[in-house]
Amino acid sequence: MTTSQNVSADGNDATDGTAPARNDATDGTAPARPGADVVCLGETMVTFMPTGPGRLADVPTFERGIGGAESNVACALARTGHRTRWVSRVGADAFGDHVRDAVAACGVDVTHVQRDPARPTGVYFRTAGERATGTETQAGAAEVAYYRAGSAASAMSPGLLDDDALRDTRVLHLTGITAALSDTCLDVLRTLTAPAPGRPLVSFDVNYRVALWRDRTVRGPEVLLDLARRCDLVFVGEDEAAAAWDLHGPDAVRAALPEPAVLVVKQGADGATVHARQADGTDTVTTAPALTVDVVAPVGAGDAFAAGFLSATLRDLPVFARIRHGHLMAAASLTVPGDLGTPPARDLADRLAGLDPADWGRLRLGPGWTTDGDAPTDRSSGTTSHGVHNPRVEVRTP
Image (tube, rainbow, N blue to C red):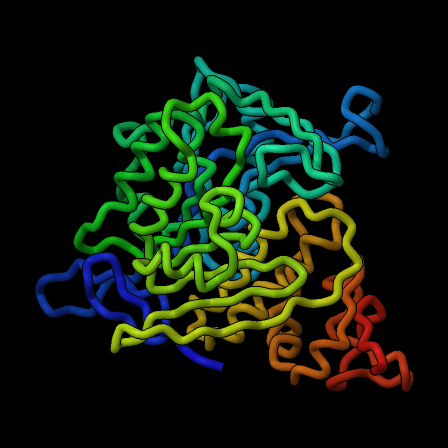
């Protein structure tokens, strides 16, 4: 297990990869506490998921929910006890009411969500399955139909957003999805990722979505690589890196992205690898395997992983523990139908994240594992593991 050194955007070192508190004071007083632990900026839409299997053309009924990579992170972090704020724009319509109220219900500050009377709230329909990362149809990939062109969020621009609301935080979390929405949205990300005194730690999830870039005049992969290089903490899927940049494996991604203090390469069922830069300029490389999970739907797992990793970063945990907390939060999302799972209680997550490699490898998490108790059961003996009980968390015998 290793810890990393994090470098804030203005060049001030922060030890152990934690998010530094802002210090705008010039009179020698203690720095004021930022207004939020994490601020997330991006579009959230109303989602419609089929109530049964089949193509979108064939299914007759849908269940309504919400979906947005950035608000998913904000909601997950809020439900684990962090102070989060979501900044965005929605239409002055009923769907906008629903999105804003649903995010607020998770405990997220939505006071800086703007309402647009001239543009609608975005909507999309999707089937179960993984999102495609390449240019060709993938077997088992979800069928997705977006209705977001001209949405309220696509009109975000540097002049419309409250700069103080975005920067009064320990961490600012952004994704590549926002950059794909419009030229003005790309301007927002370029502004927020530019070096500036007092800039919070900037976290960036690449989130390469081929369909969102097809009608843009700029090349998505080049834009995303440039933005990632300007950030402090970067998340990218190994499959995304291959599809966008033809980079294969964590070492190749790091070679192309040497600038971020922390680079997290998500490797699906194989786990995740983190390159963390040290004070002498070298990297420590930490890998942690994923969990065995009875997957209900893969929607939102990447966002949940980012939330778990950020939560552990805010708590100044070692890098290895941060990856494990990412896996646990992802497992909470994987075992529910929609984007947002119920996060495990912090004491449960800490106990599971602290398991030795053998016990970690024997865990099997199923639907309801975060809500039907608070820890795993060893089904080989009928006794509980680590003194607690949860019938939905199985510790398998070797």
